[in-house]
Length: 233
Ligand code: ADP
Ligand code: MG
Figure 1 (cartoon, helix red, strand yellow):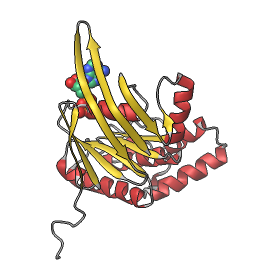
Figure 2 (cartoon, protein in one colour; figure 1 turned 45 degrees about the horizontal axis):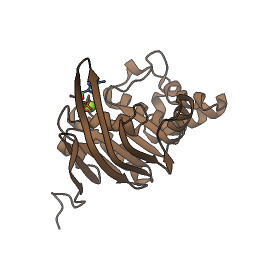
Figure 3 (tube, rainbow, N blue to C red; figure 1 turned 30 degrees about the vertical axis):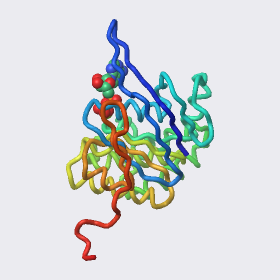
Figure 4 (cartoon, rainbow, N blue to C red; figure 1 turned 90 degrees about the horizontal axis):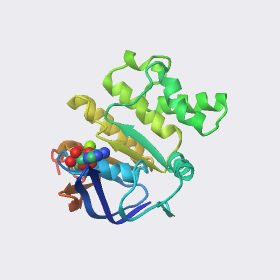
């Protein structure tokens, strides 16, 4: 689904430049649930933004579902982004004056779906995240965990190939974080390819594979032991 090879990225500020990604190689197969781990400033968001086509690498190659992502004009890039990718952010990024249902329906509007189809689909995804009864509420009437569920429903509504989540539990307390991760696991169990960025070890261990980023390179890439520590076996 995702293939990246020798990816480099620097930021330039005046005479200074910061080499953030220094040759990243990795592949993600369809149906994987992967976390990108690393300390603050290690380049996780930079990498995720490139994978999300929100930013471009300086060097290296990126292939998404067989399509080479490079030097695309903005219109074509936006088309691929809408078709292939769903985004979830730490700060939810919901529209405050729109109901939960209308927030979820938004991407469908941009995909050109008709009104009735938009609200049916949006309701379907709100049901999937357990918020059918909250469909007419505004974001500020919802808890943090509920807001993130709405954001996840919105990301799913356009039926992307890959779901990308940058610190999806970063603004949530521990219990709510685990609940949101359980929802992410459930969506992955249904076949969705998901990449999350986190700096929290216990969150990363709720995915199936941990890719560790340090000083601009991947220092570790391992499958998570699926046997729970408290299992009686
Ligand atoms: P992480 O998500 O792992 O915390 P980031 O990818 O956000 O790390 O940032 C990596 C490094 O790049 C940090 O030192 C950060 O300050 C710097 N950086 C990120 N975005 C920009 C930008 N747009 N311009 C300049 N520097 C940036
Ligand atoms: Mg970040």
